[in-house]
Amino acid sequence: MTYAAITGWGKCMPPAVLSNDDLSTFLETSDEWISTRTGMRERRISHVSAIELSTVAASRALACAGLDAADVDLIIYGGVSNDELVPNSASGVQIALGATKAASIDLNTACTSFCYGLTTATAMIRTGVVRNAIVIGVELISRYMDWSNRNVAVLFGDGAAAVVLQASDTEQGVLASSLGCDAEGRQTLRVRGFGCTYANREISFGDTLWDFDGQAIFKRAVHAMAEASRRVMAERGIAPDDIDLVVPHQANLRIIESVAKYAGVPMEKVMVTVQKYGNMSAATVPVALVEALEEGRVRPGATLLMPAFGGGLTWCSLLVRWGERVTPLGHSTIELPPPTQSALEMVNAIRAHQDPHGRSLAGLMAPAFAESYTLSAAG
Ligand code: ACO
Image (cartoon, rainbow, N blue to C red; front, side):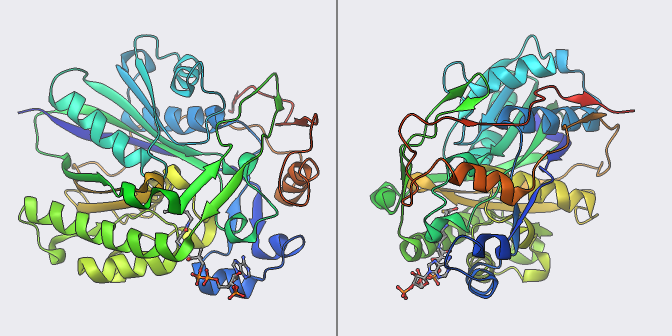
């Protein structure tokens, strides 16, 4: 029997921090409202493209696994905020990494994209289609945000993380996945105008219109993630007490607490990053996983639960058995160029090209990213 071991992991968090107080400088909101309703205190704003964030995360994951990019058979790029749609983003990461023989797939199931990608890559390894894969969860929401809409603008942040999967004879990796889509609720979470493209270092913002029914999403998210978690535990005969760590999607601290309660797992066993990164959509679960490893919260042989929920309304929960190794085999020297502006300055630059309703001003194009598009290898 072939399994898909998770042998490498790495994240790339853009360094610029946007605080709740920064948001209060242009929105009618407050640190008190945001932190009590969501658990969020700050989030990151990226000065580089989603492909660059992904490339750094993926090269760190490859170094961690001790795997050469030339040996990668498959790259799955999970996320919704693609730099461009044709060619796809996975191919952009592929060329930046030098993964010359990889198949490259963009996978969009919104916030669940990384978990769906992990399930897809696992299935492809277990059935012998590929042997080595990179799965990325990435999001660059700030470029598409309607910064005039306080209902959503306070909730999101940018970031990326990736894992390497490799064929293995020992029983580890994703052991059970429960995936589904509550399509009856698809109108409760819509971003119209998403999918605009940019090129030549300039961005055309398009008109994004964020329609979110927060309370309906909240209820459906809790129900779906808790049920999916129960199903994967039952499938493998695992009791809630046997779960060592829950690594959930991070849309709201109160959602995480409710899912943990219904799944029967105490909060001490739940990885929470929402306070410092907000909701990074597809990047939330892999970033939380990488940080759990960095903090020593994943022990050899640990059993992990990964519930997630997103637009569609897609839902899932994955049961993962960790292998023996919880430390990296090596480290990548690739770094992002430093940002030249603060997070608030970057957001204000985007806002300057939106009218008071968050729509782009006709004919205006804004400089998208820092001058340097080149990743540097330090040291
Ligand atoms: N600052 C201050 N006030 C605000 C803000 C804000 N940023 N946003 C909304 N309000 C106001 C509302 O206008 C409303 O005012 P009113 O009572 O005068 O009408 C009041 O706060 C209460 O709004 P509610 O919607 O009842 O607030 P709630 O406690 O439900 O929290 C939230 C809203 C945080 C969106 C919550 O419903 C939630 O987390 N929902 C699910 C998560 C979600 O939608 N995430 C988006 C991504 S989807 C995903 O990742 C799965």
